[in-house]
Length: 357
Ligand SMILES: CSC[C@H]1O[C@H](OP(=O)(O)O)[C@H](O)[C@@H]1O
Image (cartoon, rainbow, N blue to C red):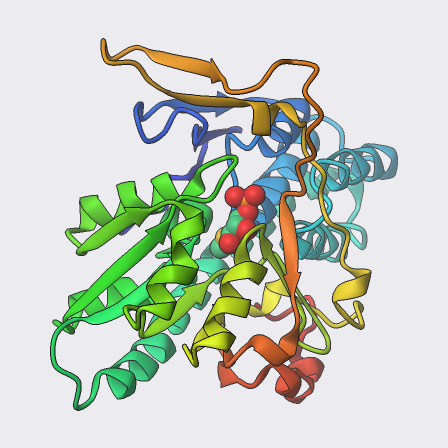
């Protein structure tokens, strides 16, 4: 995986992002030169992944304040970015952190401070990812002890470097295990309807990590067959009681894992934990366009990208982008703080300030 953060970088007084709507077929970099462009990139999932959309929102504030550091400009930019996607608390955590850094300053100082605060958020996420990798590796090594053959892992959606400012969350322990020479294989769940699993397969192929892409619906059967040793997924918002919102389909995998005694872990930085949210029932679940269910994007046999209509435009469809896995189905939460039981998050609540990651 890359040493730098190719998903998002500053270039002068603009930012450049990797357009994830074009992957895995095209690596296209897009320059964002305004608040509206940054908001659109988050809303349309050109950038995606809870920590990455938080960092992008932070840079969106910097874009907004380049020529106007007024309270009104700051408030308008904050409101615009908060409205882009409701579930990933990292977006709101990053915007809260930007507010805390900028509000006390005179308007004239806010532009430079915004760029610095956004860079700090990005660097902090990368550091948190590295720590998640270390803690997750220790868990995988203990799981692998005494076993023969590769450790059979499963993940859902994409919680790799594409979704963060570092090496990823759920994929960080996987990359760390591969780098440490631990024999692993990863079942990669395709993740309808936006197919972020294809992004995970793309990442793992580039890193040389053995993996197999599966349809979402194959996951339960593989666990029933005893072919999965551990599931690690990311998160978009973890409530104070440990209930966790993640990409839709996560809950189904957690139920199957519970039925077959398969360890099921969440990997997420502290910026994904929302101590202001008492339980999963209070987590807002994003409803995206039903067209994402009706239409898929892909590559034709001729190598042209295409949108394929699976269902008629009037076909009834609904598209919750996330679901909530109850804390009782989780074995632990792997963060930069170590690995905590889902009902043990209170031990780090006092550190869940804007100063932390
Ligand atoms: C470390 S990414 C966490 C999380 O974000 C993804 O959602 P989306 O692709 O809609 O932005 C997915 O739920 C990942 O697990």
